[in-house]
Length: 344
Image (cartoon, rainbow, N blue to C red; front, top):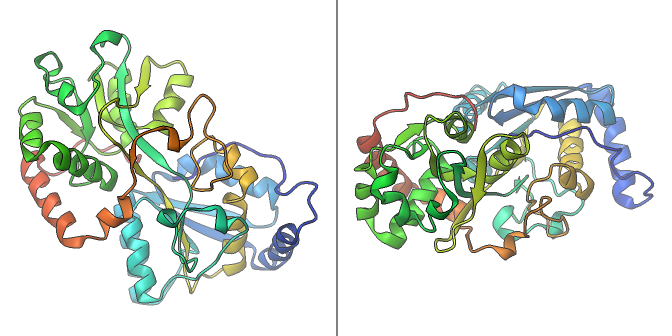
């Protein structure tokens, strides 16, 4: 999902080679006249991106096709199979798709300015794909339903009788980030943690926004599956929500990945968009943690290095057998998704 506010012109006042390259890309992109972005989450989430890009680069009609990442990837796969490519750019949570598409030779390598500032765990060394943001999964709770002294310090605290029937997460079998989260906890505490957690009668939804909406509405009280960026936005909007990093468990991080299709109908517009969105100036405006090392953390937050993290997201997801086995185990526990929110 790519959602952000209007911003000042990219590279304003700069005369660097990077700025000149962007200008050259813009001239070529204007002759293409359009750009198609396929993303995770509903297209409405990208309204700010569309407005900002169109304001900076008029003459290029940006359209967004959005759905769950594990639905959008199938749409792109169909286009690849039919050799009728509509998507210029994919921006999805499912990083394993980009690894697979690179292996198939269907991605166009591109290294935008600042590529060297991005850590190896967040990019393909050859430029086939790169992370657009970094999202921790923390705890969150309704401040009217959970007293501060009762806030869990570790995942084991969510098993307390007082929280029975009050916890919500995404469906692990359906959401890659949540599956990684549960795998991390099972590695630390054993599979018995999952069994004990299921005995507390937790709720499951599709999409991290949906889970937080349940919490602020009072339908549930807390979660250990909060996408921090989404949670802090809701808190800033005045919702009764507090976001807390665990004092005892490593915090998993996931990220959206972007890649350009090799046969993209508008290749120059695609490169222009990636250059713009991954520029230091634009990454600062998103107020999210960036994969770039030269971008400060969101206001009020520490750099990611200030937290105890586990960042093996890509390593986990490309272990196909492990992931498939875990999906099957969780699907047997939770059943198929029924609480759909179409937001990720």
